Length: 170
Image (cartoon, rainbow, N blue to C red; front, side, top):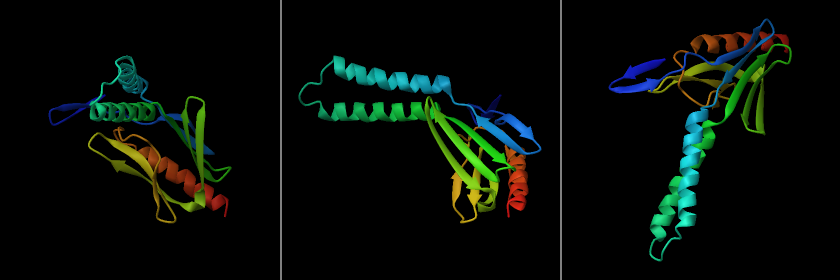
């Protein structure tokens, strides 16, 4: 789906992928941007490779610094695009779980349902994404990207399961 904002075409995904939606919980997945990540990683590695093949000459210190900086920036963004996220709420365990995966590297963060105040949508010029507000007032992003048309319904489902889990685990 493509939305037009001004004169720029912007790709907007409809919703997060629903992996599971049952009586006991919901699991949502944010797909990585494989093609975009690959392009940025290849550009970064090509720039670094070019610097190795064509050895810098004396007096090109600033150019080398600039190219290394751009290469690392491109590589960082490319790797960021390759991260797959999974957001899950389980009534049985009474927790919100956010899992991020980049290849074999995995990271997982868990919050008890009673420690979560609400899940809400955050917006950008490109679209919307999901965030969570903790009981402490701290806000965290659930989705890495803000490219979804309207994830408010999915935020509502997450909130429903969080409230149910919090009541069950008091």
